[in-house]
Length: 258
Image: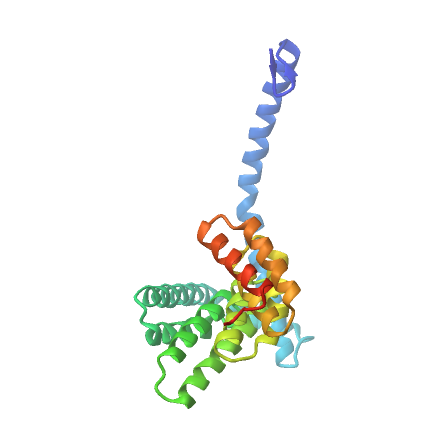
């Protein structure tokens, strides 16, 4: 009989038993050493932190000061860890609350909650993206041009910041492109975003529809027709197929937009 590539006989059975015993002894030895290893790690970490603090005081070569700081760190490190954990919990709270507000379409409250979350995690691309979404929704309900422009600017800046942090973050690519086309009247800027988006999300239909619109506004009729043809071949939803066929025929006939 073969077990994991080994023939089961007296010799290999003995090897297996010996290996199992050796493995158990090794595991026990490691467990015994863990407190020592952990303690050494903490001691090294305290010294590293103490050196950093001493350097900030311009006393990086003062061993006495480093030892003093190391003792201070030992006295407060548990409280520091508790504080960090509490802040992490706070970040989770604001993220969850903001998402629930979005579920109920309470956009102003959602944006305020995302502000709190972003204050804790300023380089979290998805938080910046979601806050930008809420700003865009607030722009739609603004009752003055100035307020609308302010919210749209916040939305655009949020999407761009998210893409600075993560250039392949496709939700922000698409949302920014849609904002440029439908709200900011800057369609030419949306083209490269959508082209990059489709290099990642190769089968996305909505991005193709939007990019075709951008191409048509730029007079690139042939490129738009190619996209409609791709949609017809790729789309799983028959409604999208029918829409793409209709637009293809209209554009090919020269009556798009009539």
